[in-house]
Image 1 (cartoon, rainbow, N blue to C red):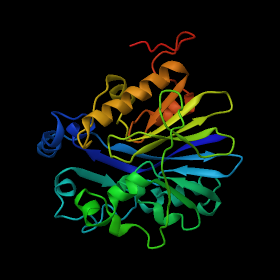
Image 2: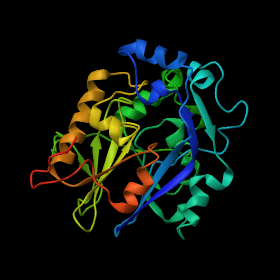
Image 3: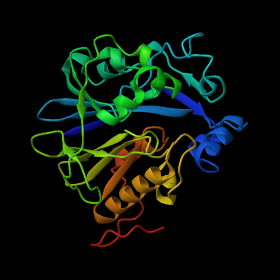
Image 4: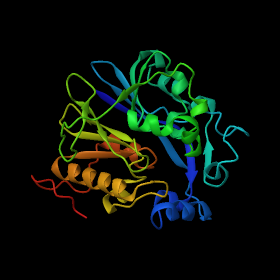
Length: 287
C-alpha cells in the first residue's frame, strides 16, 4: 500500500487563523482584524493506493479560486482572510497523472470537510464514491452553509455523497470510528473542531505504522501537541477534545501526523517521521 501527498497550490491565511486568540466568536473577529499573514502554505490532498481500490482524501483547490468574482465578496472571510494561488496544472486531476493515475482510477474520495481548499477539486471525480460525514454535509448545506463560508453553490450538480455517521465503535483514543476498507486498515474517525463535521483518516501501513491524515484538525504538528485551537473553530471544547484524542493515539503507537497545510507534512510522510519521540513501549511523547 502506497500513500502519496499531492500539493494543489498554496494558501495564505491570517496568523491568528493558524493559532486562534481568544475564545468563541471573539476568536473569529480577532482573526479577521489580524494584519499578519502566514507565508504561502501547501494545500495537500492524499492518495492511498490500496488493494481494495485507490482512495483520495480531500480534493484540494480549484484553479478558479484566484479568479476575480469566484469568492463571494459579501463574505468577510473571503474579503479579509484568504489568499490562494492555484494553476490549472496544480489541480488534483493533473497531479494524479504524475502518479500514472487518473480520476477514473479512484474508487473512493473521502472529504475531511467541505471548505473550498479541500472541496475545490470535487469536479474531477464524477464516477467515484464521495464520502462525507452527515454532520458536515448538513452544516455546509443551503443558505446557512453559505453564510458559514461553504461554497456549496460551486459543488458539482451530480454530487450525491455517501453520508456517514459514527457508531460507538471505539478505536484507540477515539470513542467512535468507521472502517472504510474490508481489511480495516483504513479507518475514519470524527475530529470536530475546525468544523463540526470534520473527520480524519487513519491508515495502518504495511509495517504497522499509523498515518493520520488530519485535514485541518490543526495547522501543524506542533500546534496539535500544544492543544492550540485555530481561529475559525466554532467550538473550543470540541477542538480541544479532538487534539487531546490525537495526542493520546500518538502516545500509544507510532503515528505520522499529517495536517493539510503543514509545510513539513510531505517530508514527514516520505520519512515516516512519527509524532514527537516515540521512545518506549508505552509510546510516551517527548516534549
